Image 1 (spheres, rainbow, N blue to C red):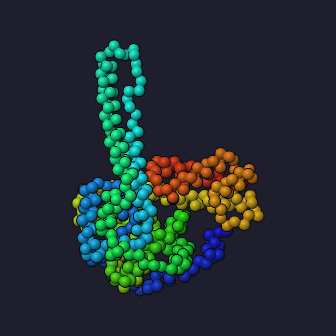
Image 2: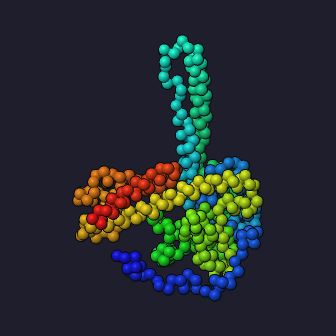
Image 3: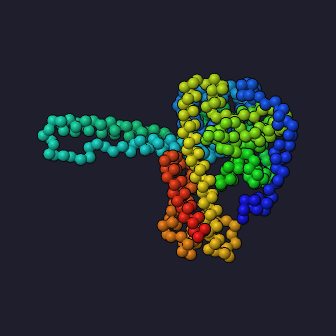
Length: 402
């Protein structure tokens, strides 16, 4: 089925531009304000990734972030969508787990006094080496004991880690905004937006929640704009094309569909998206803290881009594997089925080798780690898995074409 036929089958609206931009004349005349113009009056809405950044920075940075939040809370301009709070609850443990993992790996330093060389014992220089090894091993033992003490403290954290304690002091009912939406209507709207690639959320269609989290946050922002009639600064590390216009691999400015939709819901107010570091700079946090946060964002952005690339390629691979499965099982009625089940069925039909089936199982496990476990993975490891996925995809595609 061609892309055009698929769109027709799914009900693609040829006049969708009229729905996205119902007020064509205001495309040219809408009075949209700059960040500098709205920063002292706008509502500041935090995304989940903004709440998680402080787990990767120092105490001084956390103190200045606290001061910034306190000012916004006192003026009733800080908002956390209910969906963001729920995503924070889901991902907080993973961030602490990353911290635990990094620290735990530091203690895996082997001692130096491993081998003895009797032939060298008459040399004073070798005796000096042995004395130094003994001293170093003694310090290593103390180092590992100190790390164990810190790890024990981390194990004792429930919701009393420094970041959670800060949020507990600041984020009450006056900050968390959790409007209720009709679940059926939201799911229908999500499908419509994904079919027509209307932001936000369509880039997350490969996720288990199909991108509904982004849409819930966006609907919360729209409801906020409608009820408060105030501009919004959305603080988010999202750099995907369903939030931003992009060029040369960089985010330029928010998608105009979002800006215009917010304007219509808020009686002419302005919508901006900024990264967490830009937000801190905008509200007067010191340059050194802003730089620390910016460096952490750059690291996370690179890793997230690779994760997104893997997930997008995985979705294409799944569709190709399903195509091969239907070729070899013409009587199959399933519209979709788990990858592992398809791979086993294809192996039984001699459509794929045992080695290829093993690679598919390993890639599926890696995909589940990315989506469900949120464990820390190096950019290098993700790139390796993308290369393996590319190779497996080519093999499956060649079998489909052959």
